[in-house]
Amino acid sequence: MDAPDAIVLRSFKMHDMPIPDSLKAVGRAGAGVNNIPVERLSARGIPVFNTPGANANAVKELVIAGMLLAARNLCQAWRYVLELDAADDETLNKQVEDGKKRFAGIELPGRTLGVVGLGAIGVLVANAARALGMRVIGYDPHITVESAWRLSSDIVQAGGLDEVLREADFLTVHVPLNDQTRHMIDAARLDKMKDGVVLLNFARAGILDDAAVLAALERGKAAAYVTDFPSLTLRGHPRVIALPHLGASTREAEENCAVMVVDQIRDFLENGNIRNSVNFPAVSLPRAGVQRLAVANANRPDMVAQISHVLGSSDVNIVHMVNESRGQLAYTLIDVDSPVSPELVERIRGIEGVLSLRLL
Image (cartoon, rainbow, N blue to C red; front, top):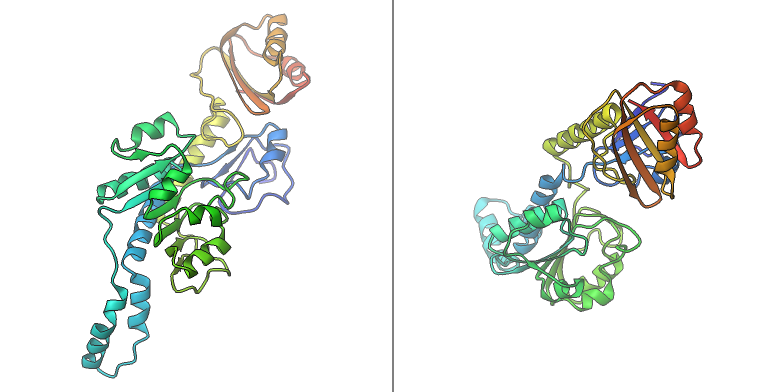
């Protein structure tokens, strides 16, 4: 299509592609938006949607699997059996019995899982680990009310990251990668942890410092590292289980993400409502009146007053309105009781600071 209203993608990189003049929305069937030029789109008044939570169960199951793989040394044991050289079952059985002691593991009940980040995935992981009999301590300074409601009541909420690090036998991170979280788990923080801790990273590469993790593995501070993000620094280490980014790779998760992002974009295109945007505020308004204006603008004083003045000067009455802001952007939905002329639309578009306007 030469003039799309919306673009929906998974891993396609948009950074080098021209942005069509017709584009009104971009949707990522997944959580991360590193492949999308969010700042360029924001400057054009174009919201970017993602699908937080749509793949949460898939990632949760992989985290639990990772804990079990590490606790019972399953990957090392599997490799040991695969590499045995035996001519018959009797010899094979003897070699198995002779070697199995080196793969003795631990059980999860009674162990402490530290969960850093209590969003959609972190809450599911915490609750699942608690159901397995683990003690769970979580930390998230930005936990939402919704996540707090969903969190099991007997999960300990830490006052700071260092408290989690000190107590964890297993540590899993579920935070986005940004300037604040890059190398959040570094050598200094690893030094604060128990000897023999199991580290899990199914969030993003870079949250744990690979060089620091390697050093911790070599000196026994860390017993194992399970990650969905292989690196040359750690690949092949006997106590590293590196998976090829399988977190959301289930049929169910891919379908959930696709359905969720399409529903969000359809609601935006038809009604102007915004849910799960990474650059715009959440805005939802039931339809009322004859027509609806959806206005994206720079977040500056007097914008709503200017828009209202233009409408009022043409005897267009506002029936219902909502205005929200997020950072440098603001978004307004306005329902009016009479049709809005093309001339009036152009007058509003001409207000300094208005980035986009749609008549719905």
